[in-house]
Length: 238
Image (cartoon, rainbow, N blue to C red; front, side, top):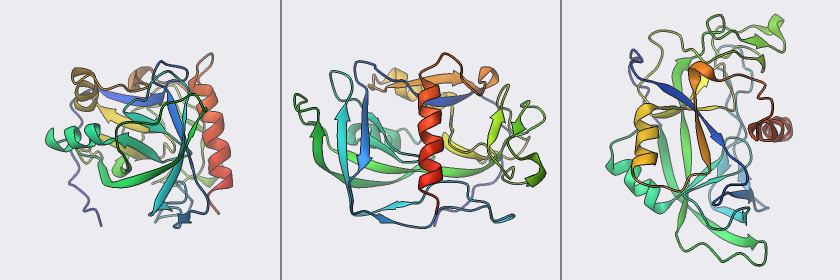
């Protein structure tokens, strides 16, 4: 079990990592059934579900290439993320934190038929659920069910967001993480952004400045991802 780090003061830029559709190296995966799933994570204060059902090994996946070549990040349903072995090795060598597991994934199907099978091996990673929590007031955040307010997880999903601001002293040092009160969004530090861009990884992703991140995301490919995640969450948290 992961040991919670001591809270730290956030002194660097923060970004929201978003899947960018239809890039040259865009790819997605789906979980191949039958699959083993664990219980969804819950808030230990109010009991509200705060994430998807855990996808447990052995993991079998179907890959779909939307672009022309396979990249280093493959997005899938909900909270799951698959990365290339080369990104996984470099991440650990760089001393970054927030990803764990690094367990193998068996690719059982590749589509479309014209797609060449991936040359690289891929691994499933778990993303840290940090002690960091979003500051609703400073973020201009409006929740779908404000009457269910919880001081830890927020109590309900996000209806509107003007920016992402964390509560002072709650971040525990991860470079990629989930923050309490902001389900379905991966937050990353400037260190993680620099790591990805400086080493030339093919990532079908955008680093959106947290201070400028709004929700809903009009006229953005991310809107489709938000809609799909909401549907996945409804279907996979029972």
